[in-house]
Image (cartoon, rainbow, N blue to C red; front, side):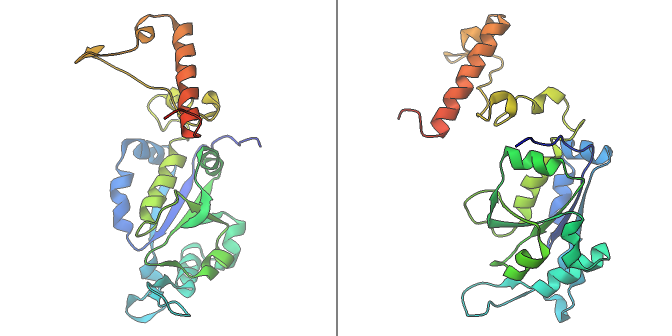
Length: 240
C-alpha cells in the first residue's frame, strides 16, 4: 500500500485528565519547531466538561471487577463541547483515536499514515480504561504503543505525537534525519545501522575501520549489511 506524504501541518487535540503533563512535551525543540511551523498540540481537560457533579468522570464497571472506567457520557460531552458538533459525527471529519493496549500497533507505516492527516484527536484513557461504547461509537481508531499496560494514555499520546510531528517538513534540524532511520523505506523496514563518533579508539573499543576509510560506497555497503543483520536478529533469524 502506498503511504501518503506527510502533511505540511497537523492539528492534534489531546483529551486528557492531566493537560499540564504536556507542557514539558511542547517545550521539546522538535515539537517547538512543529508549532512554529503551524502545527498544534492542544490539550482538552476532560474533567472540565463533565456533566456530572463534583467533577466525576469515571464509574465502576457493570458486572463487577476491579478498577474504574471513563464514562461514555463524559467523553461525549467533552467532544461535543469542544468541537460544537454531535460527537458521533466527529469521526467523519477527523480521526478520533482511543489510546488503549487492545488497539492497532503503532509502527512506522501507521506513523506516516497519521502524519498525512490534517487533524487528529487523541483520547487518553485512565483507571481501568474506556467504557467500550466510547470506542464503538465515538472513535475511528484504537492505537496501542505496545503489548503492555500503562496507568493512562498520556505517555502513549506523547509517543504518537512525537512519531507524527517529526515527519513533518522542517521539524527536524536536518531533513536527512528522517529519511534513513530505523524502519524507514530507505532501509527497507529494517532497524538502523550502528553509529559511532569520537574518540575513534576508547579503552581499546575501536570504531570499525571502514567508517574511517573515506570510501563512501564501502561505508554504505557496510551500513546496509549491519541494518539487515539487526533486522534478522529482531525477527528471530539471528544466532544466540
